[in-house]
Length: 86
Image (cartoon, one colour):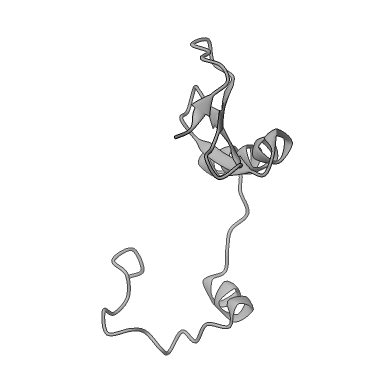
């Protein structure tokens, strides 16, 4: 079970030490959270997550990502496309 290091009702960031050794950083105002191997990495990842949450992230080209991961877009499983990919 995770344990938090501070309860701050005035905003800011709350850290939780996870059972697997990672650290979760949660922005109290938005509820956006991310994790890393230590607090510094968790904060860097949280900054990226907050950028995405506020619409400041970079757009992603699905075909480019599929190619990088070695996925063949023509080989869709029997379930078909996910509902958000219409």
